[in-house]
Length: 284
Image (tube, rainbow, N blue to C red; front, side, top):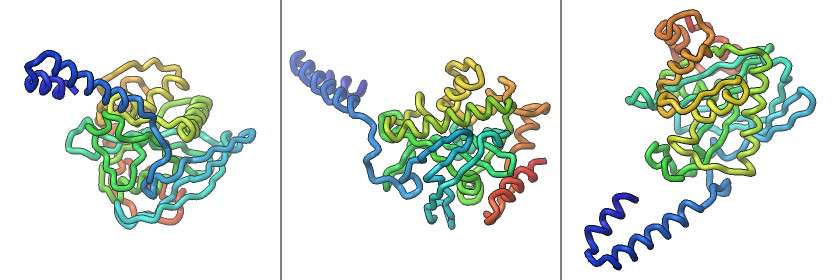
């Protein structure tokens, strides 16, 4: 926009022409900014469905729970199912950081919740891609992508990143009470459900994976995290979590990162509980 105004002023020496061109630019911009986010687009197969949440007493049923089968990052079978969990059995939450860029500060963050029976449910805040779209942090500044909470199993949301993208992923256990974990889980389910009827745009600075996690933590952990550069550049978010005493470790941050990095690639096996155990057992 600034460059456009500069071009107008350079090209048109007559003040009235400059004003006319500027008015035209502002009019077009106002229309663009007023365009609401939409869920009515041609989405990629792995983000075609919103999770549907049903809660009765302490039993939670999640429809459109993703458990896709991957042959490569781009060759996969998108799979969806219904799964039910008992909220009373929710006992842990882990914070994950996936580094996918040569720029250290650029990363994806998400959470995974553990239950007494060994099952885990991962929740990842992402751009919702249309067919043919790819993520661009610059494009994401300009209302390019909608927002979605993807809910699925760890073999999908973690395994796709470690096995097929071959990206380094850190899995940090979070220090929290059982009540805090449960309210955090419910808060993320509420937001996932809300987005189906009230779509939002993803924004590289203000509405990302990291900013959404911060909002949920502030609400449910009694934190008051304001703006921090490490939220805008979540590749450094583990440092912030460590300073806030959220990571369940007595080690230095450097040693904790060594311990909680998913060190080796693991073949995706059919037993989801065992696979979740394997990626944690490899943490020395």
